[in-house]
Image (cartoon, rainbow, N blue to C red; front, side):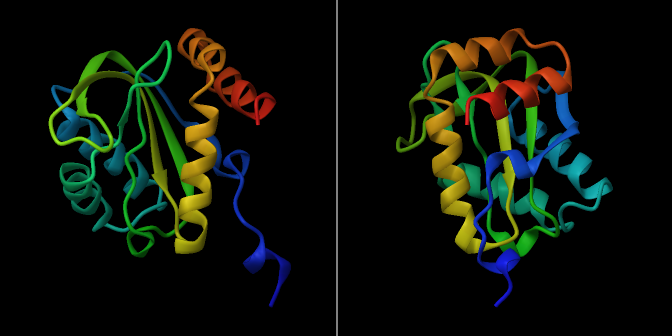
Length: 161
């Protein structure tokens, strides 16, 4: 087995400047996930099935986090819908309502979205845990909220991992 196949993904390996989006607008979480999925489909990161899969998964397993300072969502879905692994980061122009992870009705006003597209099932849990650890840092979240370029966003994450 090659090293590449056994190596688990780090968050830094999944970040691309053209997938850090600013002032993203949507009326609701479905519209937001549709728009972000369309970006990934056009850039050949995900299959056409990704959009419906991520929207449907969000309804069953919500991903809103009551993180300190800035509320975050980390929508994701099964690896079978992903061609090339990545994380899309969307800084929202105005908060969008997501249901809190682990609940069925607690609503959070989300300001920052980390949409995961991971093509290896063994990597998904590791990346999710790394993201959740990173996003538990209030100082980092506030820095991300202030960042005004894709490079700054990525540098903040890389310097805190």
